Amino acid sequence: MNKILFFAHLRDAVGEETIQLDLNGKTVAELKEFISEKYEIALTNVMTAINEEFASDEEVIQQGDAIAFIPPVSGG
Image (cartoon, rainbow, N blue to C red; front, side, top):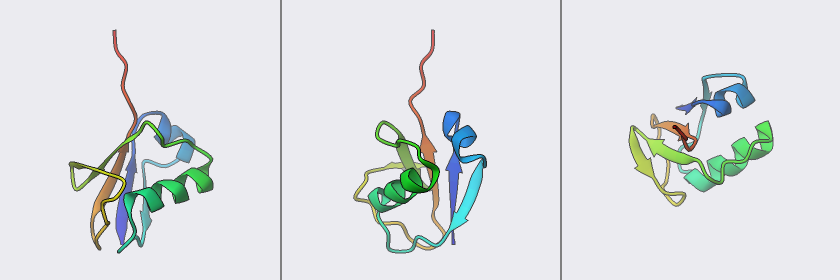
């Protein structure tokens, strides 16, 4: 199983801080597509991290990886 973490407005949209899915062998792009369809949220400008390291959409997820979706942050 894999732990998926959501931050900021994504957490509010999903209604959970974390969810568990079996993603072994799936790409980040496949996960983004699944999450976008299931929760009706856009993940186009969202950074993705696997095990606390930024990952590209082509990265393959392994069993036990933790995936985080981090939206852009604005400040002032």
